[in-house]
Image (cartoon, rainbow, N blue to C red; front, side, top):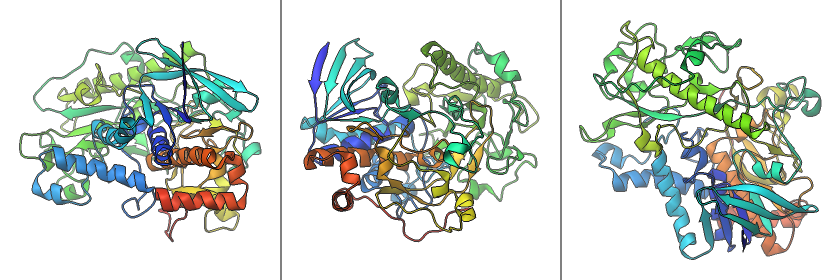
Length: 549
C-alpha cells in the first residue's frame, strides 16, 4: 500500500475531470487525476460519442478552454491528415460531416488533443495522470473526505491519496457511494420535486438507458460478418411494451412526438458503395427510396468522411449510437456488482447482436436482407471486439446539493405555466449551457421524455454537497434531478461543470475558505466569478437567444 498527497484529487478522467484538472493547474495547484480506462476523455473518447452541443457553439455557449479543445480537434486534422484544399481551408471543418454535431470526429483525435492540453502540466510536475485506476474506498473524517484509496487495475497496486479537496468526476458518482455521501439515484417523486414530468413514485432503479457504441464502415462486395453473439436469439425477438416494433428493426419512435417512424442505415439506394454520400442536405435532390425516411442513420454520427480526402485514402465511418442498442432492461448503478457486470455484458451483447442482425437479416433498400459489408472497426477504438472501451453513461448518482436544478427552473412548459418566458436566473452562475431535456428510455421501462428547455446557467450551488465540505461534483453528478439531468449531461456542459469545480477547489485553497463559504458570501462569490471570467474565459450569462422549439 502506497501513500500520496496532493492539493486536489480528481477521480474520473472524463470531460469533467480533464477540464477540472486544467483549471486547477492553471490556478497553481498540484493535481492527481485518475481514469478508469486507459483513455482520458470519457464520453467523447472511450465511450465513442461525438459531441452533442448547443446550436450557437461556434459563437458562444462554452468556456474558453472548451473552445480551445474544439479548435484543437480541427487543427489536428489540418496538421496530420491529407485533407483536400476545400475542407482544409474551412474554418468550421466538420471532419466526419455527421449531422448530429458541427464537429463529428474520431475518438482518437479527441484523445490526442486532450493529451496535448495536459502535457505541459504533466511535464512540469503539477499534474499526475493515473490511468487504469479506480476508487475502492473513501475514508471520511466527520464532514470531510480524509483520503481515497485507489487501485491500479493493471498492476494491482493500491495507493491512499490524501488531499484537501476531492472532486468526484467519475461516470456514475462512485465516491458518493463509497463515502456514504448524501445523494439521489434514479427518478424522484413528483411530490418531492414538483416537476411536470416526474414520476408519481420515486424509483432509484429507474435510470436512463446505457449504450455500448461502436464505429462501423461499409465495404460492398465484402463479407465482414461477425460470429453469432451468444444472446442474439433473445435480442432478435425482443420488443418492449412501449416500443412500436421489435428492437431489431428499422422502426423506432420520434423522441418528441412518440410517433412511430421508419429510419434505416442508408437513405439513398444510389449512395451504397459511394462513400455513403455527403451532407444529408446535399442529397435531397437525389432519388430517395419512398419508404426510407430521413435522416438516415449513416449520416447521423458519421466520424470519418471519405470525401474530405484524396480518392482511396479513407472510407466513411459512422458511430453506431442508435435506438436499437439502447440498453434499458436493467440498471447498472445501485445494484450488486455481479448484477452490474451481468447487465453490462447484456449491453455488449445487444450491440454485437444488432451488428450481426444488420449484417445478416436487416431489410435492405433493394428488397434483400443483410449488409455483410458492414465492418466493425476495432482499430478506431483500440479494443479487440471493436466496441467502445466503456459503456456510454447518461445518468449518474447525484449529490444532495446546496441547490438542485429542477424542471421549474429550465423547462419551457413548466416555466410558462408559472408565467415566465425566460429561464430562472442564478446569481451564483458558474457557466452556461443548452440542450433539450432529453431522457432516453429507462430501466423503469419508460419511453422517451424529450421536452423543450431554455438556455440555462449552471448554479455553483449544484456542485456543492449539503454536508461534506471538501468534495465537489465534477461530472453528471451535480444537484440536478432525473429530469433536468437530461439537459445538463452533454459534452460542453460536463466540461464546464468540471472546469468550474476544479477552479472552485483551487480558489478555495488560495482563499482559505470553503466552497460553501465562497458561494454564500456576496463579495467572495463575486471575486470567484470575476476570476472565472477574466482568468479562465467563462461565460456566466447567455446573450439574448431564443430556444429552439
